[in-house]
Image 1 (cartoon, one colour):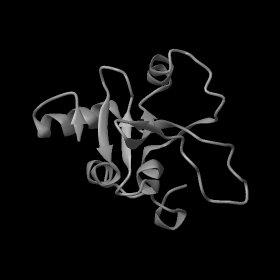
Image 2 (cartoon, helix red, strand yellow):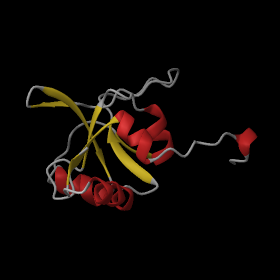
Image 3 (cartoon, helix red, strand yellow):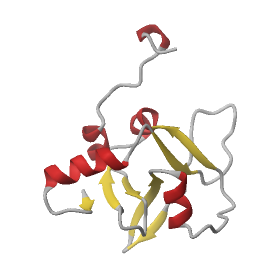
Image 4 (spheres, one colour):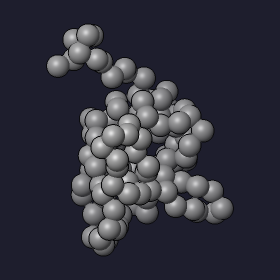
Length: 124
């Protein structure tokens, strides 16, 4: 994890404070209603593929400077987001902002291990 603070414990705590119950992601193209795949928009920084995600609509607007990306932007449950990330992927929270942090999918899964409950498990 790269980002806001030097102390890893503090950084984990900071990430848990910044990342709420929902996150925003940018989709590369409108999803096929018959598919269960979301293609997240990525970008290359320093020769490495990164996928942005945002802690809030305000962070998204500030990061993109209000520019239209001509891409769908979805607010999704953090638990669903963490379930869908691949451990080897690189995710950048709030790119370009003071709160920017970089995580692997595996790090996100460690930070937020709570399962996404199904209806059978009591989720309605």
